[in-house]
Length: 154
Image 1: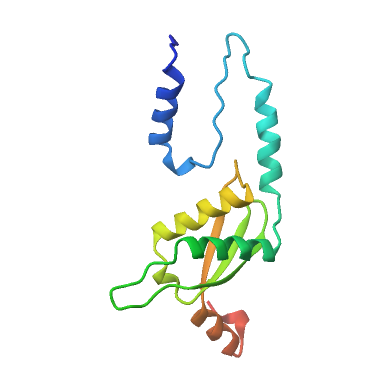
Image 2: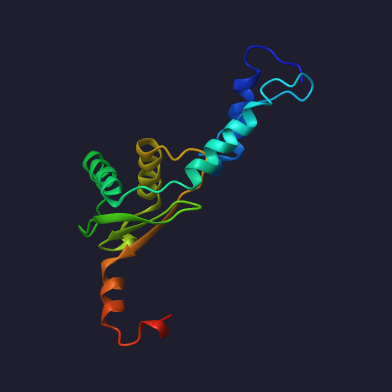
């Protein structure tokens, strides 16, 4: 590929536009011809595996949530209802998965969900691995506790 001083930036912009759902993945440009930066591939793989297996305590998760909601509160609907995040916890690793307990999951829209994910990545350093979020409503938890047989509940 012919290159100049702007080639990598143009190519990086094209990749980001086409693969916007993989914004969390690190990009590394290597040369098969010269072998340039080939040795860094395994370093990035090891970092990604480390982040993929990482566990964060509930107190740290809640600190990030508190700070994020203080900077940018969940949006309010036209009827005046506002989403509220009570607390969160990490439930699994591989990939790191978090359950966030909220008053009503339908009040937390996609923009705010992406904001929370971005805050987790920036403050907790989850780079190179996907994150999963489960938004649990308060009413759903109350219903599960009240049911006589939770094993048959669908």
